[in-house]
Image (cartoon, rainbow, N blue to C red; front, side, top):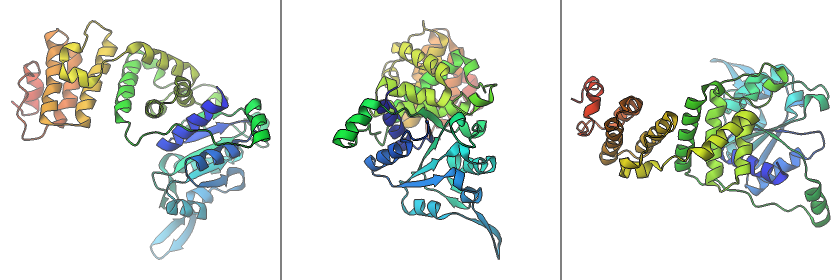
Length: 362
């Protein structure tokens, strides 16, 4: 992937709050790239160099008080509270001692520094040199690695030469809209269908210690993957950037499988299916039918009115009429909790009488 795609991937991850780990050889300009991107996005940067810090710089300094012990956060964390759109740049991550890496874990995942909760808008970007090229470097621990989106920074010689001659210009970045729930809905359904068809790729911790320190598939990283690729789609990012984001979270092999699956699935628009249940083709593979039903119930949940709730049941009734009621059973259980107490039992849901009786609707 080119330098432009890497920049776009970082920008999208920063905007949706996905922690990023930028790998690259020493002197490659990783710090400059992060600072330029943050500036282009209008965000201040807090640089925290892991190799120069202690665990207390992330877990907080214990101080005895009248009420017991409190963990006082460092100044960089306090500044982030005053500037909630900050980018925390954790530099030289792999040269940090294991105890410091462990303290970083809570910062990366929970935005927690000592007793201070960082604002949800704070973005986490880290940089690391491969262990073989860093003094005192070590492989990243598997729990910490699985919380990052891993990208490799390789400076483009032509781009660097052009910048040296004519000045470094900020390239236009993809901007994620505030609401990309429609895209999230589509990609979540695609992922559910993919894992149904390929359950073995849901969780696969590499046996090699070095590979554990990079991207690998887990329920956590898959959940992050569908969200960032949905954001990339909403921002108009290229397919190459979407691939880059996915592989940075779950690994190249699983990401290629998933993206190929997504291209071939061609799921119908859930809103169109709610309007006309006959658009749901039941001659397709079961995983695709289940994904479509998941998308329909999620669409109802996103904007749940009595009319839309009943439309969801009408879709499930259509599925039952085609003789595949077992596929609709899971979706029926997802629709039930969405009901307002004042709504009567759906007239089209006679096939689900046992479920409705259990819910005391009939």
